[in-house]
Length: 293
Image (cartoon, rainbow, N blue to C red; front, side, top):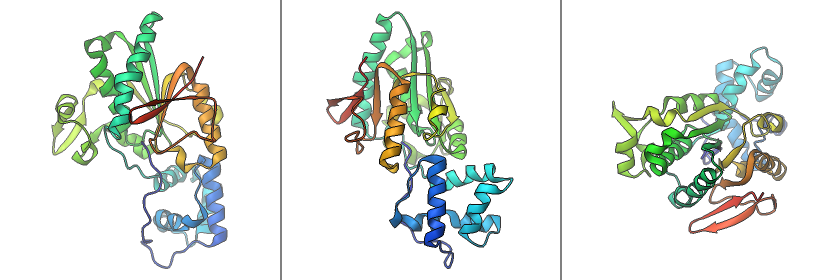
């Protein structure tokens, strides 16, 4: 559910501009560190998103900022703030209901039935690009809706990963405004959230099956250490990668998935010309990618 780079906005700090050379330096650094590709016509994003970082660090140019990111003793702390600045998290609970209905009513039930038939109750789901937690919490709610009282007999974990530590901290808190719940059925809100101080807090039972973790989708070796999954969600993320990075990331999803596992990507995204490893399965309102095995 995580999305990167909101619509074009006017730079808040007039006069602070990034030169072509500075843009290339920062663009290449961001790509090296995260796999996020910033197109040539999006220089304004560097200016708009990073001007405040220069101001807070008392730096006079984007060249100085590039140097800071590469060599300063505090560069690791600044990397966290860089990733927070260049990523936005426009998301909500129950985003794209047709796709989620396919997940809950068809794919999830199929996977659970196959696990029961194999005499195991161990389920792993990877939410890649989990943002502030709406997607993995939605899946946790759906698991409770499908399994009901039986859920206590299962070993279930949703590994929810994002690049940005600040958004992960927000996800762990699990407190949301009504805007985040704008696409959520009212009966779900009353059942799985506690309303206090005009905010909605997800119930502890949902938190217990989610493991929020910092991770970088461009770090292929690091991703190999993640436990393997029956289902992977990565929605509205890979569209911000170039084709080479898309192939690498989708390859990591394929490697992580167990045989007969499923990959969900954003409804506007496609693996066409990216990977032929998966078998696309069409359902009303959604295409799901299946790993044969």
